[in-house]
Length: 305
Ligand SMILES: Nc1ncnc2c1ncn2[C@@H]1O[C@H](COP(=O)(O)OP(=O)(O)OP(=O)(O)O)[C@@H](O)[C@H]1O
Image (tube, rainbow, N blue to C red; front, side, top):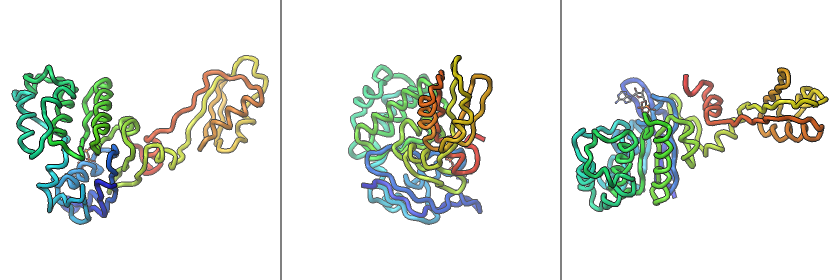
């Protein structure tokens, strides 16, 4: 069942069109990613879905509700972590949870959330004294305090070190495991590949593709490489042999190092041709195609210019 349905969403700021007819849906229980470079309208999209911004045109339904017309009812059912959440430095962790709980008719027990998110011993700590990772855990707890059906997490791991980012990913998986549908805004490819069941890829003007990370990567059929080292005693030169294989677009050899470029599943053809012809190789490496490749192929430009 779709918990979010967006059709033909258009948003302009002044004369500048940021969203030009964006459509997507989010199914119950999935982690749905909005991925794209800065300034491509991801935050504008989620904030329209949350009822914080008014679209110029288009239809949005969240849990069957209209975010503008049914704003009050909707806010009871969703949890929002804004991109630039700021809290007073001297507010205590328990105070802010207690305050947020008053916004909802049927809140979660914030004491349980404190334990669940590893903040039990920070109950009386002041917000300003928390580490970046602890602040993020608090923001997730705040997004969940209203017992939401859908949680919106915007650029949650920006500014965190790699270890804290990975820890936050585990927390996001826990949110989904607890039955909450998650909408994740991110400009990190690795994060989206790791976490999201499906992704909408944003570029200027709106969404350029939607699908699971694996589908998006497969669809674009980007070139990738297989590399290996010829072992001493390899009698045959494999360049001609490999150049003729299906999917292979180029083979280069530099001394004993060979690099094969191609599309699709040519790696299997390469390895079996080597084995069939008894050509011994070492250090065989297949470069994985990534969402980065998918983005470049979809938009004709690099994700990180
Ligand atoms: N309130 C506003 N008034 C005018 N322009 C705006 C407003 N909010 C956003 N914009 C512009 O709309 C475009 C999309 O911004 P938005 O924040 O939605 O993108 P984003 O993909 O979420 O990027 P980021 O990750 O940097 O937040 C940008 O060019 C931004 O400058």
